[in-house]
Length: 172
Image 1 (cartoon, helix red, strand yellow):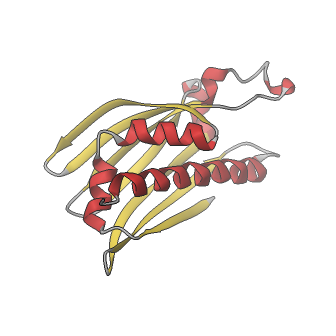
Image 2 (cartoon, rainbow, N blue to C red; image 1 turned 45 degrees about the vertical axis):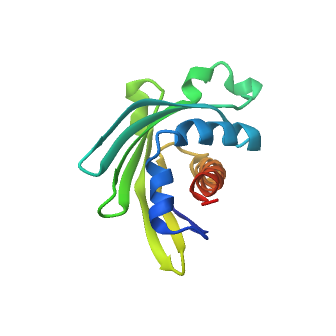
Image 3 (tube, rainbow, N blue to C red; image 1 turned 180 degrees about the vertical axis):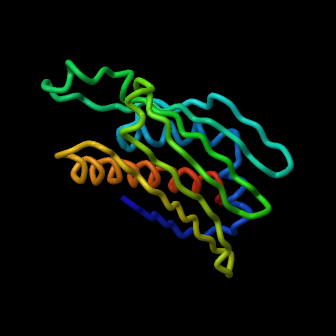
């Protein structure tokens, strides 16, 4: 399932980009996600490198969901975690991301999520952040419903991130 999420900001692109690459983003976003109850219990930064204008980082997410009784025998809370690996190039104002679920390696073949992240200046001190992604859940019967549910949660997370970026990038 392909998706695209765009947010426009009344903030210059360079200020927005500084918020995106800020080491404070993970903590502020995690707090905002918990406050908005978007299904994320915790977000931590596993590693970070900023060299030659390129940010490489890995964030670890733990979902905050209540598993239905029928799923508890199959899905553990640890399995509702994932890592997001991303790279953002400040010269190109774009990046790439991928998701690695915290499940048995042999089960990972049933899921893939990758995409791009870009920031563009719109003029008049405004900017747009666009996230594009492709999510695929390779399971029978529930595939389409499950993909739609996952993308709905992804949208909520990016809404929380956009709100965090607005707070961080707003010039006072």
